[in-house]
Length: 354
Image (tube, rainbow, N blue to C red; front, top):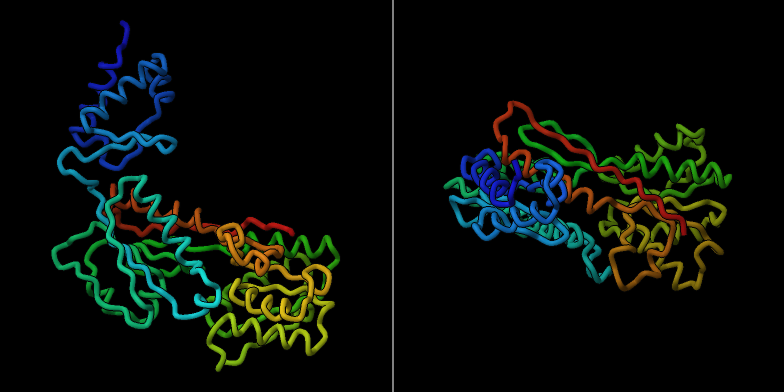
């Protein structure tokens, strides 16, 4: 019996209307449907076009075909997204690295037909989100909001939460997407071993995110034979709260103590930017007068100031982190009550040598 495009469309329509295929789910491509029903790609494409005309799916070129909610005009997954601004370093950088991530996340949610509302708040003045009428199916927020004694959020939000942006697993009544620094640092230390580098200069600030990165770096160094004695650590004074200024302090310390035979390992682009400001003022040339490997390198994302970031680097996995969040939103949205909390890891593994 010959199968026509209308037959395929009607079969899929019944699955959508009976909620066996949920709103927001990516449909098979025309090629996949053609293989499934043993028809030509043109026949499968006509079936998808029919569903689109019936407003049961939306077709996005280069992205995919997604099921629309036939009960409501918008996606069934409704997400509240909290984003907080930081009051440090951004003015000096002339761009906010965090904007790169949030814009990537918003773009992906738009492509996947996720209905969201964005809250942008100052990190020191967080207010309680309005969720009294269960306006959202999910709520996303930076891990620091929950972990820094923001009990108002814990009590206010009655729907599943996804916390993101931290560098370790934090157990609690929430789902989580977090970073793993070790793959990138492992590549850095293997490279140093191959290049016979054995003296390292490390800017250090006593805050949790820097401690966690440094712990991961030391663990990777130990795996290839380096020890604590190979690291000259520059402790940034507590009264220097801005990370760019902290980098400038470390650059001055580096030059004053004539440590140019040490390879600088910076765990933050803010530190890197501050150090590069000092080196540029003194007309020092990268790879000639000093060597530096940076983590959180944003060079690939920006148009200006590339001279400050034109160093070897481990690139922060912003796109992977955003994709993992969207995947988790869709998974939790389909099965919100599972009796367990999900945790996804996104690894920093891209090491670029310049």
